[in-house]
Length: 315
Image (cartoon, rainbow, N blue to C red; front, side, top):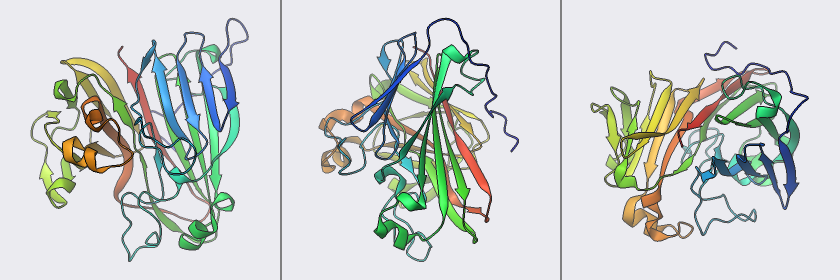
């Protein structure tokens, strides 16, 4: 698979401080000698924390359930095999909103030295954590609703320059299936009123706040001034940037994915969600979510699809 941001293998370093990885209470925590860290909950393989230079980059609701009772509100939930409420006339029609990946318990497959040439230059500069989910691990209800033989490998790479998350989808069965995937990332910001998002200019988007009508993003910079729920499709630029007070804060680089969702619930929607706290938490978060959600990806028997993102922090 030829991709512009395809990770390149690194030679593990045998000298100097090494990354540390440990698991506890249903989560895996990795940290670098620099102090940067990432935490991944096995339930949903949800990244719940990513700290760079001592600063938390992800927003997680104070009311988020971290005990496996429901999907996490915040962090980086994995959406698969459908985005939003699935169409009733589609093969995913019997599944819940956003599918089953975010509310299934994944298996921790282990760690390795980073494979991301974009993130690090030596094995002591990065660590990759792999998580797996297959049809055998699904609930009986999910298997019945989506009876395909599949395997997912989700790789979370912590590097000194950023975080990389990649989802590998494998069709293990004898018939093709269609799917959507999305990394539903909640980024923490100081103030949503001072945030601008660049890299979406001249792109067509579906505005779910305006009855899923199509519009063109004419302004090169997007500002969030009310409830926002947009699907930007077939984006030509690889990078979407979040700026705070006009200064670069985070770069989100798509890898083999063309779509990006931008979401902020604003005042009323935030109040209406029982697991969104504090109620004014919308002021300190914005979702910039890379994915393949405009239509469906078809995967033939034996084939593999891989897509994800690299996020770089400027603080």
